[in-house]
Image (cartoon, rainbow, N blue to C red):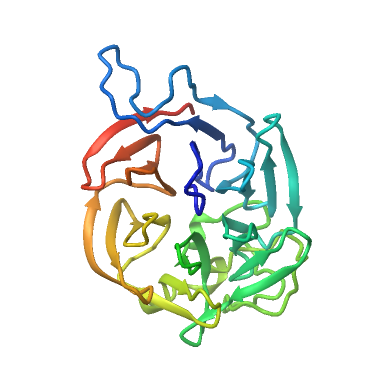
Length: 313
């Protein structure tokens, strides 16, 4: 999903299933008029807009985030790379190597890139000048397991999912051994930024954590605390909140749940939003919710499916 840029008019979607050998980056130009067309055209795509395959050959594309200039940054998780798609010329270039298997990305209000690092079990901030700050690597006195997707709320607080991936999901690419700095317990060590990028995802060696070690974690705007705000999900994945900071959505094994966001960032009033798998979200300026699965599914704020936009491959 697109995080933290309320004025962006271009929405995009990508396949983000790490198990695939080839993942695609797909950009969709979206307008926000909701007219019905008798000829079958999408009411969410601008006239003349088309779904375009930009580049293939990645191992596990994830975490698209848009900067203030409209450039799109995204991760290729397993080789531990971050790429940049430049708005001006439509070209893709390598932004960063040795990312700790960065997965989710989002830009904060100061234009800094926030990252969840699969292999390092932490959330970090890149000031875009080469300086990395660790924002969180533990919660409730327990090390983070696998930080996954993230969303920055209007106050500057950071929500992210802390999930579990069974060992059988992780195969090939050097992902079967424990990473440098992370032993058989899956606990992050002190490996500095600049790790090799070939580390294992920790669950491959560590066994399933207890349920209260997983869930949704909130880093307060002052970055002084990391609070677990939901532990009632089995394997939390994609997440996002509405631009007004009042409603929160989280994906969990074929279902999407909604929560009310309290003033202190905690969550309550959990309700089933829809029964649909998704690995990522976006929300438009009318609070319609975009889910990425085998197609792009667009739901109204009440949970009504408005449209399905097929995506190639």
